[in-house]
Amino acid sequence: MTFEVTILGSNSAIPANGRNPTSQVLNFNERLFLIDCGEGTQMQFNRYKIRFHKINRIFISHLHGDHFFGLIGLITSYNLNHRTAPLHIYGPEGLDEVINVQLRYCSRQIDFEIVFHIFEPQNGAIVFEDMTMKVTSLSMIHRIPCSGFIFTEKFAEQNIRKEKIKQYKIPFEAIGDIKKGADLQLEDGTIIPNAELTLPPPKARSYAFCTDTLYNEEMLPHLQGVNLLYHESTFDKTRAERALETFHSTAEQAAEIARKAQVYKLIIGHFSSRYHEYDLENLLKEAQAVFPSTQLALEGYTFPIERV
Amino acid sequence: MTFEVTILGSNSAIPANGRNPTSQVLNFNERLFLIDCGEGTQMQFNRYKIRFHKINRIFISHLHGDHFFGLIGLITSYNLNHRTAPLHIYGPEGLDEVINVQLRYCSRQIDFEIVFHIFEPQNGAIVFEDMTMKVTSLSMIHRIPCSGFIFTEKFAEQNIRKEKIKQYKIPFEAIGDIKKGADLQLEDGTIIPNAELTLPPPKARSYAFCTDTLYNEEMLPHLQGVNLLYHESTFDKTRAERALETFHSTAEQAAEIARKAQVYKLIIGHFSSRYHEYDLENLLKEAQAVFPSTQLALEGYTFPIERV
Image (cartoon, rainbow over all chains, first blue to last red; front, side, top):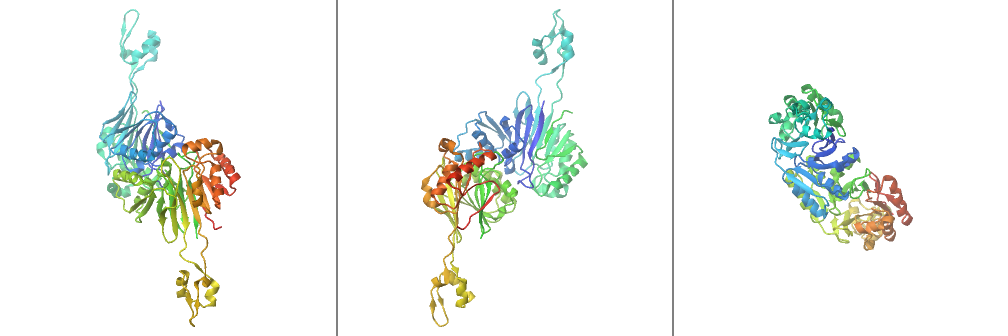
C-alpha cells in the first residue's frame, strides 16, 4: 500500500535560490494529504504532476506566511475547477478568519464545503482519525503556536493465514468475520480458534512532520520508532545561536532528535535562504555525522515511508 | 529615459499551462511600479531578475485573487529582507483589511511603513502624481469594482535650444530658470523671450493597463493616443458569449478598443487557462486582423513604451 511523501517546498521564510516555501503531499493509499501550503504550492502541483483534486484534508502547522500563504489561492482554484467534494482544513486559531475575509472581498461563491478544524498544538492530541489513518499533533516550540503532525496508518483487520484457508476449506463468506476476530466452526462442530487462523497485522508505519521548532526533547517519546521523520534544520551548527534566537534548529539538532527517538530515517528541510544549493551538502554531512540515515528534503523528491 | 513594462504573469484566474496570474513591473527611469500581484509574483522577481527593492508603489486593480494573492507574501519578504523604505499600495476597499488581518496573525512586526491609498475606480481620477509621473484610474466593467491604470510621464521643464546657449552666451546658472519659463536679459538690457530660447518638451508617453473588463467604449476618450495599451483578451471571438457572462473581453474586442482609441501599440494578455501555448497564436492573429501592431503579453517579455 502506497505511503510516501513528496516535497513541494523546503525553503524557510522566503522563496529563494530556486526553492519554494514549505509544502508536502502525503500519499497514503492514493488518498492525498497536504501538509502546509506556502505561496506557490498550486504551481508546484502543476510542476510535479500532483493529482491535487485527490486532496481532501490539509494540515497547517502555524500562521507564518511561508506555511500558509498559498492556501487561499488553492481554495479559489479548486472552486474555479468546479470542485464539489468538501475540503477539511486543520490549523490554528485565526486560519479560518484569514481565509474567510479574503473570500468575502473576492465575492466568490465557494461551491464546495470548507470545514475548518481549529485546534491547539498539544502532544499526542488526535487531530484527525478514521479507519485507516490517525493524525496526532506534536507541540513545536516556536515564536507563535505551532503544531507538528504524526501520520500513523491503522489496521482495522488481522491478516488471514492463506494455508489455513486450504487446510480447513474456509468458505469465502467466512473470511471477513475471521479477519475481524471470529473463530471458525467446522462442519463436525469443532471450533478452530481465531489465533490459529490469523496473523497480527504488520507494524503500523508512521510519518512525522516537525517544523518550525527549537530543539525539543519533549518530542522524543512521541517520535519513538517513527519510520520517517521530517525535522526542520534551518541552520548549520555554527549558527546555533541564531537558531535559538529565531526558534529554529540546526542540522545537528535535527539528527540528534532522530537518533534519540530511534526513528528509521530522517529528512531535513526548511533551509535558510542563506544556503545555496551547494551549501546544502554541508547541512547533510552535519546531520549524517550524528544520524547516518539522513537525506535532504529537496523539492520534487518523493520519500517512501518504509516498513522496517 | 527608460519607460518599459515587463510581464511577470498573464494567465487568468488560475496558474496553468506554465503561466502565472497577473503581475507586471513598470520601469520608469529606474523607478519601478508594480501593477497587480498575483500568487507567485515574488518568485517571478527572482526568475526575471527584477530589482524588486526598487518598487515603492504597488497598484492593485481589483480583489480577485489572481490579481493580489501574492501581495501578502511580498510584504513579509520585504520585511525579512530588512526593507526600511515606505511602501505605497493603491487599491480597492478591503485590500487593507485583507493584508492587515494576515499580518496580525503572523505576529510580524513590519519594520517599514505601509501606506494604503484606497480609491474607487473612476475614469480620469488621479491615483498618484508627482513631478514626473501621473497615474489615473479607468473604470473597468467587471463583476466587482475594478480599476485600470494609465501611467503618463510628465515634463516639469521645457528643453533649451542648444544653439541659443551659444548665440547669447547664456551662463550655466541661468539655464535652470529658462527651462522653467524665464526670459533672458542680456548685458545690454535686451530681453530675449523664453519662447525663442526653448522648445516644448516632447509629447508625454503613456502606458494603459486595462484588465479585467467587458468591451467598453467609454474608455476610448481616455485611451486616445496612448503609446502602449495592455488590454485583457481572456477569450477568442468564438467565445464572445462566455466573455460577456464572465465580464471579460475577446482578443478581437481588445483590438477594437486599440483601433478606435488610436493607440500606438497593443499587447494582449489575461489568457484563459483553456488556451495552451500553441493556442495563443490564434488569439494574436484574431487581434492583428483588427489592429496589426499587437503582440502577446508573454511572461518575461519587456515592452518599451516608445515615443511616437
